Image 1 (cartoon, rainbow over the protein chains, first blue to last red):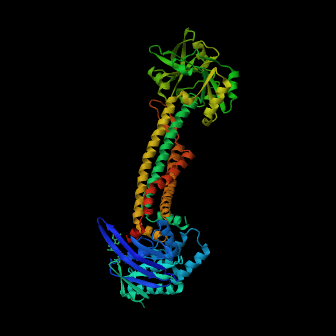
Image 2: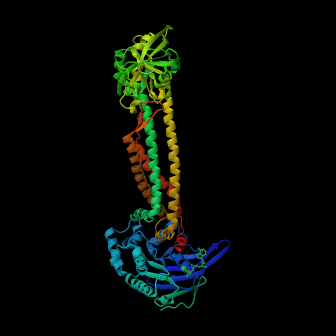
Image 3: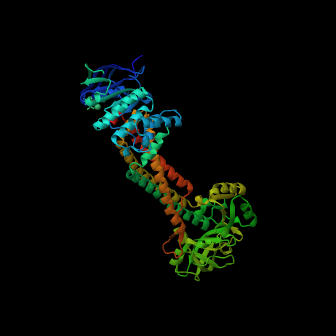
Length: 231
Length: 406
Ligand SMILES: Nc1ncnc2c1ncn2[C@@H]1O[C@H](COP(=O)(O)OP(=O)(O)OP(=O)(O)O)[C@@H](O)[C@H]1O
Ligand SMILES: [Mg+2]
């Protein structure tokens, strides 16, 4: 079976005035379908940069990136928007729910911006099923500002899964949560990884979170570091 | 466009209530102001046109060909027979409501001690009101002319006041026939007339047609036919039909051609209105650009999220444009309601227009047409969308990575 993610020689640098900041210095990485992988590394090591490139939000300065058999290295913005919508679910550190939409509408949102799309009843049923799986069945009609941080992140997780993505990316999903809630969120992601068979890739600072992962990668100063543990 | 983005756009209007309200209020006042200014200038224009058309000139006048080009010399030699056959021919033209004949001439008027030039108007009282239904209401002092009146005259009120004459006084009118024979008549002043036009008040003497015909030696003749029509909408069309019906011996003019002064005042009002509307438009637009920009800056991370989950740049742009359109529509609707309420109130009450030194007065009724109201609303909506173009474009060009980092 081909890899879901295949990065080879990925470099990324930013131009800050006259100086060039190198964020990634040649990353090679493969991730297979169904994996639950965490990327760790100190602040500024390039975790976010890497996840942005994998998430097709940003483009590498050099190197090749094949996602699910598609070479996305040189796609234009609208193409990438489609790739993101079809293949990737996002979970953010700041939850980033849409404040004017209620829980059900937030979960459904990525599907509602698709051309065509499923029929309303099927979609509705799936929204309810996911809300149930993340433990928010009672909150379908609540607005984000009526929820706790942990609940908001659960909504975000359900939203990331609604499109049945091949890959869910989460950049420090627990950074804004207390440790108990963090554990619950990681447990939930693990459960969904089994239940829905979705590939998860997330980054964290938090060593407590790392131990839950089945595969842990370390990044330092823009390069993958050896000794990444595999459970 | 999916079904969800427009609904987000609409809900976003209510998000920063205070700011949407401030933007909304500028639109409300902009639209209301334009309607009020238009209502009042339109009312003033209508008052003037009514005064001209219904009180003085009529909608259309028919002369002997060549008359109007020489009207300054008051050429009584270019006269027409005044007979029922000709009147009937004009009355048969579609939209024509009434026809009367007048004899316009010039001469000297004196009160015994002073003497001055005047323009005389012999009026056929039997038909005058059919052609100029408001002629009667423009009497400042004394009584209007009646069909049975003989040796009487009405003076423009300023002429009357400078001569220190009023109802019951005697004046002497002097004039000459087209052939050059001069004549004079002593007439009793029956009243003073008033008009929105200073010239009418200073220079015009009105008298029964037969009296005028006797004074200038033109029995059974007039210099003009005055034609009333059912609706000024049909002005040009009716003038064309009359022209075709009467043939080349006659010339047909509309009030606009006969009173370019009034036409020009109205054109100037339209220009001033346009300038005011433009200034308001720019002010309101600037306000909307500002608020929409603030909204964009405030929602950078949210826009980043939308872009991340696959919303197209164009859709982000349309979303902000819809938000602006909703603000424009709400503000426009409230502005229309406010503007029409103000204009409606004054239109119902009427605004008396005091002309200096006149005891009688005209009443102005401000009004807005449905078309103008609808246009003001549409401009408010389109203007709001136009103003939002740039902020919306900026929102749509955000880099999702940067936007999510903020
Ligand atoms: N837009 C940018 N412009 C300039 N430099 C940038 C930009 N984004 C990231 N960098 C730099 O690239 C490097 C990697 O940043 P990145 O955000 O990927 O690190 P990170 O591992 O996610 O850090 P953290 O744990 O603090 O989130 C850093 O040196 C950072 O300053
Ligand atoms: Mg980071």
